[in-house]
Length: 181
Figure 1 (tube, rainbow, N blue to C red):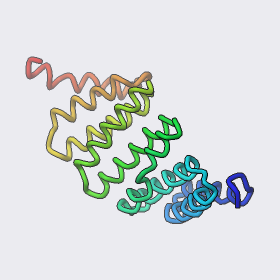
Figure 2: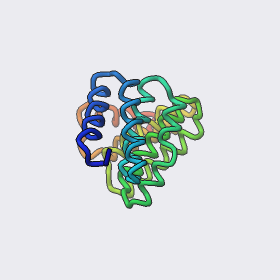
Figure 3: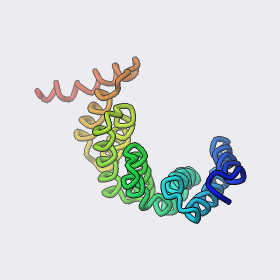
């Protein structure tokens, strides 16, 4: 099976379909098969993409440690390939898996790194998503003021703010006003 073979393409499509239909364990297995075939064909970037997809499927299947292992090393593969966007996404995937595994410090470091990478890319939408995850994590860790600041920064970076975002942005300014900041 080569990376361009119809069989491999159909396996990848099937895994994606399984994911979309909520069959996360089946999707993870499909992505694993695709990943291994791509690794055998020495298609490292494509294999890393399959590994990331597998990681997301495993996370959705409630298997965070496996998700974390699946995504390990993928940011570096994308960095070497010059694919900064996928590298940032992979860092974010690792952070989400770390959080779900209970490694909150590792998750926080990962979210910060992913947000920094998305900022460097000028990808405000993904940066805002990561900052929202970081804010929720900061709340979990008992740092509400930091969480508010992070959430506000995420909203401010969104290029298109809906009514909910604008309302939330005004609400988030209240603590600063009350504290005289």
